[in-house]
Length: 317
Image (cartoon, rainbow, N blue to C red; front, side):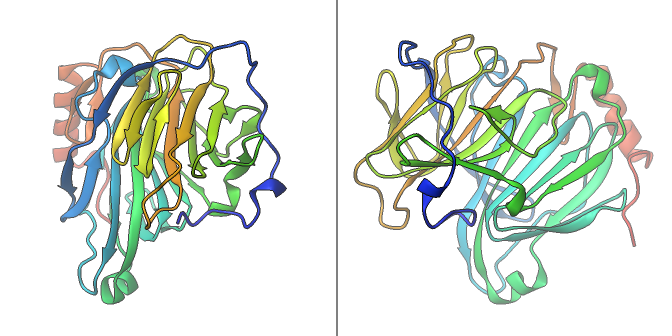
């Protein structure tokens, strides 16, 4: 169960309703995330694999990390590595991850908190499990999203914002069937704490079995629905959607994003959990290789040269 929750969802304010005469946003395509390993060997699902960039813009990449229950000695992280040209948003749904970077930031991302790192012109960082998790084992489940920066901001100074679990804005659907955690953006009148360079919205919704969510969505934003766990469908066509699948909604549509949870869910996860993402497309060319996201191949080569020359910082002692 996600760390950020409430005992009684009806104590929360309901989101603004979408006009009933506007049909739900149609589905463009559904894809299934392949599995793989990241860093020193922790399991991930590559949520955006195979989806054309123009349907994801301003997003670049997203990994669902876990969900995995580590035994003692199994937890893994990443080595020191560079980034340039985009932002990483690491949301720990359950469990703990430590962070450190080359500009002096560091801390713990734990149980519903989010680390928002603007790589800008360049930064080195490392993410790893704390010693206690390595020693004892435990639950590890999170998501890392890469958000592109427009060309004018790609070389800005690196920056960091920590969003604690208590900062996340909570709301509910009108009938109380869905709990919404708004991490960034203004969603149906609820404003999340994340400060973004590209206009985006980022929501984690838990939808009870048999319940439906009609979430008003900006017409100029694209719409992505990714299933963290559970099964349900997306409207208006009622296309089935299950764990590890991504629904890409039709762009430039003023209708709400409509999701329904199946009446019967798996025993480990009693509800349907989805991430709902959207943003205003940047509309610029993307040159992406490894840890750098730029606009041209020449800028990519310069990023690799600058990293090799130590211009993105040094690993702290």
